[in-house]
Image (cartoon, rainbow, N blue to C red; front, top):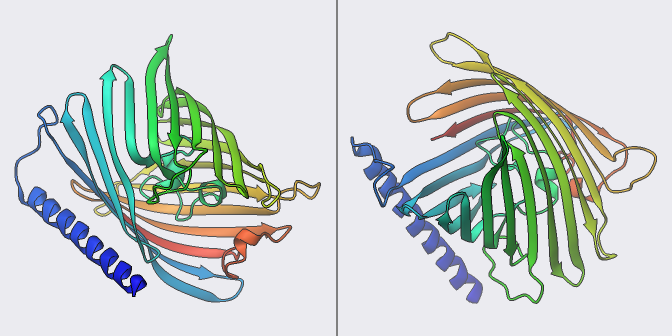
Length: 346
């Protein structure tokens, strides 16, 4: 009976939230007036829809899926405070509340974000569907830890000479999203970022995650990226150390690059060839990384005033030296694949 009541309550909440977003979005779309970002309060809507077709070559199986369908709203209440709300309507069939946070900006460059938000560990272009270069995430973006939690995050942006610098530190429940548990030991982490997205950027970060007596991770890593004109290249390495004997350590890295080729076409603004090599390891022996993967892709972008879409065709080649439990959910997880994706963002 309790399970039925909870199921009905969750469905009711999902329906109410979805209707609120759709009604508000419709009103905003029908309005011909542009919202002045200098007036308060203000609001900005965003969303993404990620549809995929996958073919697993090794066992001749395929599937269609709606990988993500996100809607969000953000804005400012006044000149020193703002908010962010984002819902996942379908994450492989599951409804999730992703972001529920408020931000206070008491001084120039300084901000405090309170609520459910991202932890200072991952780059958005590795975990966010609308920013990724490939249909599937890197190993370290998928298998290490949840990208969000409930907590308090502080950021301070300033310049060291001519180098833009960002310091970030956060403290969290340490139990992932949508679960406000009572804890003796909270999770905490920080990041230092030098440079910006245009040109050279370097970051180093760590995250301590004491979840239970049998699950405690210390995660740390560094990344380096360069972007100029139509070319970008990114690389990152991350290690997850288990502080208990119940779980194994993980080590992963990737390097990926893409080049934007502008085209004069009625349908596409540019073509985006991209390549990525990533690997993950838990044995730490002389045989090299347990699983390696090469991904090559070709994207066709159509930009508009409302929607920015990309059609991707990816090929993944796996080299498995040792079988890992994270790939044991089904035989298709570490199979060579061909993926066709349509990503719409607004």
